[in-house]
Image 1 (cartoon, rainbow, N blue to C red):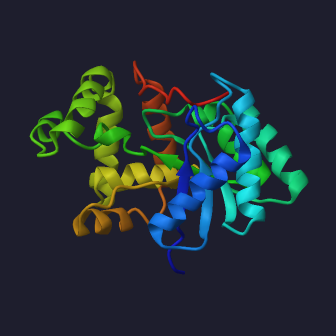
Image 2: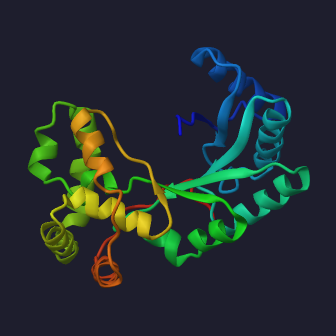
Image 3: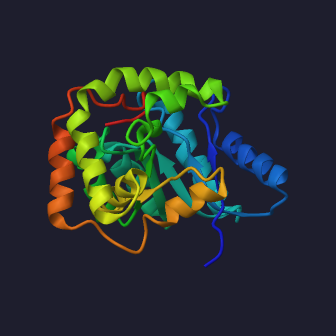
Length: 249
């Protein structure tokens, strides 16, 4: 089916006009040596801190599409209410919203309970889950993360592990039990759970081994009892992973 390329446009303070976002996409295309990209995506909404900038963002994305610089637009960290407003804007212009990315995992289930996933499905927008393994907190032991050669990355992991893992013992046990019964890895179970929620997970793929493990999350499906067991265990976690501060209502 080929590879679909996408790029995100950040709402930096100096991007206050629609054309500033068009220029940002053109700069990305120049760096990639491409004339066009499949998806141009907003990195976040400004509604939490400077709502007027959203108008320039949405119009800028629309121009990117109208100028033939992208095949579709995408959003990220748009909650159900903000997503509906953005959808109404693009619908008037006949521009498809391909995706909406948001943090979603067994340690961060708010998008399901807030109705965001249902809203995406209602509007025909593909929900995309980032951090589906909660930075590894669902599948990696703290010791192995601390010993990682990428020490800069180990710092947020160590903080997350110390904050959420002590209260997630039951959830981790359920994940591992299902993994053993299914002859899958804990990561494959967590990714399959994300897929069972009708979300497309964003996965890490730094090594061939990781790519093969990711592929092992496809081609099968957790049954209803397994999903229910994971949902119940996730609900019992005392402290969830912190939501992205740019996530809107």
